[in-house]
Image (tube, rainbow, N blue to C red; front, side):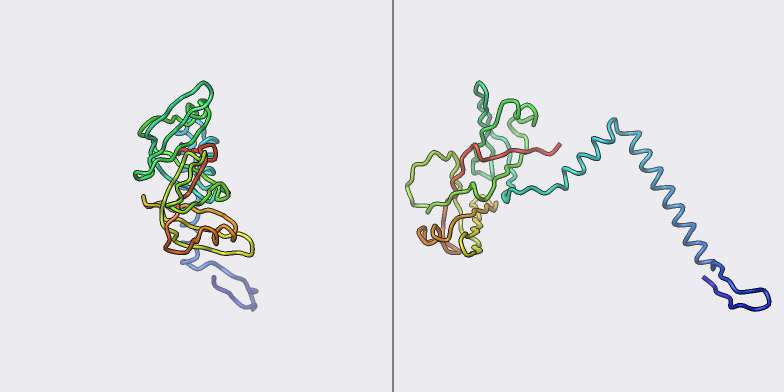
Length: 199
């Protein structure tokens, strides 16, 4: 931008050659962007659905645990189905409705994600020898512990390589003798495992 001070013909400003080129580039980029959106909208049957999917891909969930696995088996009952995910060699069982199996398109070999709230993860010592109603028992090494006034967040590095977070009381950490580097097992009820797939 060039400026001229007032004089016989008055002051004012005018664009430099570089300024004119910059505006031309901006206008050209704006036109290309509009053409791109038009072509994208024309090539998609349901552009609104596409935008919704983009939102889902970037959404955040309250579940602390987000585990990736492959469906290894599906056992269907009258109403519900038992779906087993393979987490790098460790099985994780989820019980969901048969309708959900169909909606998600689940079948052996399909990649799926397990969402588990940290408060749904119970911990035990590896040698506890407990018999529980929880279908899932995933063992690993305590990687990190974040202690608060009442509760403690325990991150377990599972043997298959995944990370699992549990939220338990401080009293429980003492009773179990948990410390960074110690072995522990996560107990999770199958009904507490939510499954999701990428659309």
